[in-house]
Amino acid sequence: MLVFIVGFMGAGKTTLGRRLAKMLDCEYLDLDQAFEEKFHFSIYNFFDRFGEDKFRDIEHQLLVETVSSNDNVVISTGGGTPCFYDNMQLMNDNGKTIYINMHVNSLKHRLLKSRRKRPALNGLNENELENYIDRLLSVREKIYLEADHIVQGENIEIDELVTLVKQDKTGSV
Image 1 (spheres, rainbow, N blue to C red):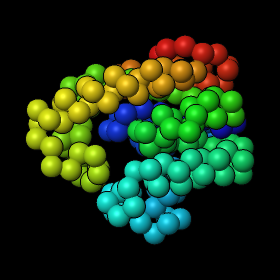
Image 2 (image 1 turned 90 degrees about the horizontal axis):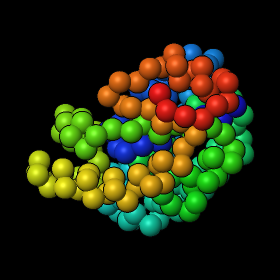
Image 3 (image 1 turned 45 degrees about the horizontal axis):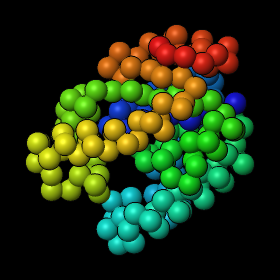
Image 4 (image 1 turned 180 degrees about the horizontal axis):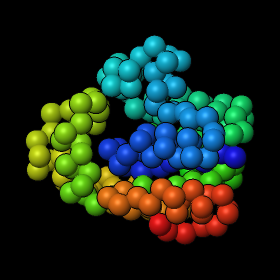
């Protein structure tokens, strides 16, 4: 079983992915971490040096490799992963997808507290960050909503999600 966790940056994809993998007795893979380990570059530095287009191309190739070489893993994707190269369709065709849906204010709060450097947020003040999240989420959410399961990030019911994934049903938790 392949399970893909999607959602905006800061939504908690890594945390949920790890918990879900443990409860499903699966391996866990963070696609961003796999990128950094494979290419010996932080995503922040890769964006800065080579740009987003090159990153998205390589990210897609890594996703394809991951899908073809794994069969029992929970995969946390980057926030933009589903939105390029028909990656959401690729994930839906090859596994189960879970979208962590969060309110703009919750995302802003988490991103302001985050220690992780995120290329797109470099130099944004609090107002600019909120506007950026609102603008980008309004575009990306159309794709995120194609997921098999939608969970509210502010109040995830992990046990219910595990049951849904195991039963192969779609819906919201």
